[in-house]
Length: 82
View 1 (spheres, one colour):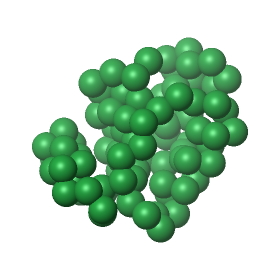
View 2 (cartoon, rainbow, N blue to C red):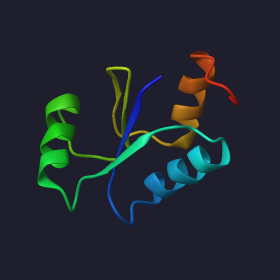
View 3 (cartoon, helix red, strand yellow):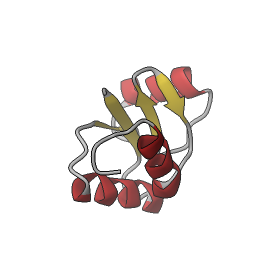
């Protein structure tokens, strides 16, 4: 499973997801959008919005979510540890 996590520095929901991913040993790529205009443009192109955290999981976009929503999604997909 390929997970890209779009974040903004200081975003409390992003911090919650990052903590969850560290706790559950989730393999992912973080793309911080405030400091990188290419990642920001990618976020908007993929999701149609600019809010974070937003996930690209094997091409499926989950926009403007939180750790509870992503936990439920990963559990449904049988990701190890969920």
